[in-house]
Length: 121
Length: 121
DNA sequence: AATTAATATGAATGAGTGCTCATATATTCA
DNA sequence: TGAATATATGAGCACTCATTCATATTAATT
Image (cartoon, rainbow over all chains, first blue to last red; front, side, top):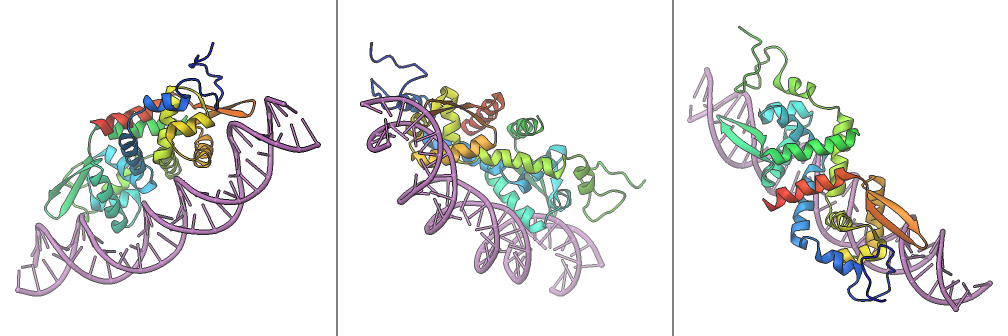
């Protein structure tokens, strides 16, 4: 009774019909999508950016206050804000000579919350 | 009426009472926690690891099949699996000369789903 | 015991990245 | 207009990291 795949104890080299790897690959999103997902998480994957996103969950803030809240250089914060902006995770609103940043959408909040929850488990 | 902070239009240098930055910082998790959260997302922030986690959402698999599913070298997959293991995002089960990997817990599924959802929006 | 198969890992390398320093831009104020 | 404040950005550097190549380890098979 060959060709019986769906068996967890499938042996690798046994090529009866489509391989397990190919079957699973067929059920996955395309490479570009997975690449974009990785890019998204990469943005969350830096302590400075994480602090910024966390601070913005408390309230909208200007760069000056953000700089103090996260305890980093103004330059470092500005550089990271650019990355967050390009990833559309934050929004900017200019008022006078200050830039007020806020969270881009609720996904940011939810993703961060899940990560925090997992970390504190 | 000084000390009236809570105002969004607060001017940075105006130091009436506690600064906005310090107030917000006080409401944030500690640095170690935020660092750990960043470390968690950093693990999600690589295309190869993302593919592996995605493949394991379909079913438990041995390294051989995973290698084919994600289309990378066995060595590269093994190296990334070590990182995923240490982050406790995957579990291993040895059977004979094969190692079967599966997702560590449901957080992994939920975090990945949110990221995918945000990407496809 | 020797061979083969599956997986893991160390070293080397090349690409990517975050910070600092200096400076540019923009806006308010005198 | 000139000075001061807030923010943004380019270059350079140190460091991290993902892959490759070679090899080690473990287990099944003969």
